Each structure stands twice: as C-alpha cells, then as structure tokens.
Length: 369
Ligand code: SAH
Figure (tube, rainbow, N blue to C red):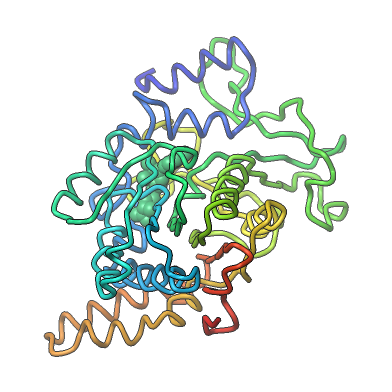
C-alpha cells in the first residue's frame, strides 16, 4: 500500500477495531506528520478548494467592517483582540487588517491573534503578514488567548473539525465507523456499523419517522470549541462571527465529503491527501452557545449577510474607473459569493455576543442595533 497514513489507520483498526468517523477524520486532517493540514496545500486556486476570502478581497473587508461594528457595540474596549480561527493562507486577516485601518482608534486598540494548529500553514500566515505593523500572535487553541475582550471570526473552520455519524437500524441508531472491508488480509477501508448507540435526546424531532438507513451527524468537537468561544466572550467580553456551509435547522442526511484538486473524491480512498469536511449544524452550534450563557443570533445566509454589510456598494467602489474586464471580474466574484446556486444560500452566518452587547445582530436583511 503506497499511502503511509492509510497503512497506519488500517493497522490500528486491525488491532483495536473500527474507529468512529471523528477519529478517522482527526487522523486524516491533523496527524502531525501525515495529516492533510500538516502536509497539503489546501486552500487557493493552486490548492484543493477555494474559500470566500480567496475569491475576493471584498469578503475580508466586509468582515473587517463587521469587526468594527462589533467593537463599537462592545463599548470600544482598548485593548481588544481580533481572533481568527483556522486562518488558512492568512488572506482574510490581511483584508480585515486593511479594512479596520479605516478607523484609527479601532486599529490602535486592536491586536491580532491567530488560532492555528498546522505548523506549515502558520509559516504561510507569518510570511503573508510579515509586513504588517499590527501586533500578531499565534496560539494553538482558544485557552491560550490573553484574557481581554475578543472578536472571533472563523470562515470554513468548523466544517474541518471532526464529526460522528449515526445510522438508523432496526435496533436503533448505531454509530457508523471506519473498518476494513472484510476480505482476509485486506487493508481496504470501508464503512461498518459500530457498537455505540446514541442517546435519543441528541436526535432532532421527527427521528421516529426517519426510515432505516437514515443518517444523523453529531459533532462534539465543534460544540466543544463553541463552548470555549462562549466562555471567553462571557468572561472577557466580545462577539463571534461563524461562517460555514451547513444548515439552519438540525436534520438528517449524509454530508461527509472529501475534496481534492477542486473535485469530490471518495472519503476513504486517500487519507491525508484530500480535505475531509461535513456540513455544520448551525442550530446545534447556536443552541450550545445559548446554553453556555451567550446570545446567539438568527442564522442567516451568506447572501443576506454580505448584502446587508454592503457588498454591492463595495463592489461598485472597487470597480469605479476600472476597465470593463476588471469590472466584469468583480461582478463574477459578487455572484460567486452571494449567488443562489453558488455560496449565497449554502453558506450560513451565526453571530454570538455577550448579553451586554446588543449588536451586531441580524434582523431581516439589515444588521441593526
Ligand atoms: N479560513 C480559511 C481556511 C479554511 S481551511 C479560509 O477561509 O480560507 C481550515 C483551517 O482551519 C486551516 O487553517 C486549518 O489548519 C485550520 N484548523 C483545522 N483544525 C483546527 C483546529 N483544531 N484548531 C485550529 N485550526 C484548525
């Protein structure tokens, strides 16, 4: 077998039995030597997938504007930190920094903190930010952040964290695991039904009516990070803006996916060489945030959010006086960010704030205090 990570996973399964998808995903994405985010070139045109900040600078600029609104709503604390979770190539934070400089007072009060576990992506981020005059620190987890007010931003971060799948069987809901395909001496990976069940109270309403074979996804790792964000906001003040593909309401269905060179590939075929993700259950994230003692906004689409933040006006200004070709490209970028069939509907936005912080709150198509 030519894939060393696959070999390790197969050996581990042969000894200890099938592993939950969450464990498989953690090994594939985060193994320190062989994991995808340690060795791969995930994001960008030359990478495996394109994210919103890689499509257009306008995305990060509008996130920067949201940070300014959040800071004002928090009572303009000084110092304050903007914390990006999973910053990829550092593109979004670069655009955020440029945009927040429109407010000298905010820029002067702000320090940047990037939460990144991948050593190789940290190198890319450091190089991208080498010229900035703002203070930038890196940490590997939220618990290492300094105890000052924080504005958290995260784009396509939660989807990369491990999740579990449960399948409805005649004997109830059972965990779907990664095992071996049953041939003697085989090291081919296959989905198998494991022995763990699921507490009924974790299932969304209507589970009784789902047919045998239905899939439910549960992501304790995403909920754990949400609790840490909420705790930090509760203790130190702040807000969070979470953007990702996913659903507004908890439901059923298999959303496990692997992407390599911009194409979907089988999830078990090539561990460590493709981007493994699943859709984010924003209702579960919002509920856990509320239970942790912070406000959670209505979950809106990326289309509603970016249009409310002024995407079209920003595009107009960016294109003003430019060639027809440049203007056409900007138009295409807008379409990719907010088009119904593109990112506009699939991507959702959730905002968390401390109880004493009234904005930025989504209300219909406008963000108002
Ligand atoms: N936000 C970027 C990149 C998304 S890819 C963009 O929109 O372009 C996911 C990012 O999350 C990568 O930087 C990856 O290394 C990071 N990541 C994955 N798991 C993480 C974890 N547990 N803690 C911190 N960062 C993580």
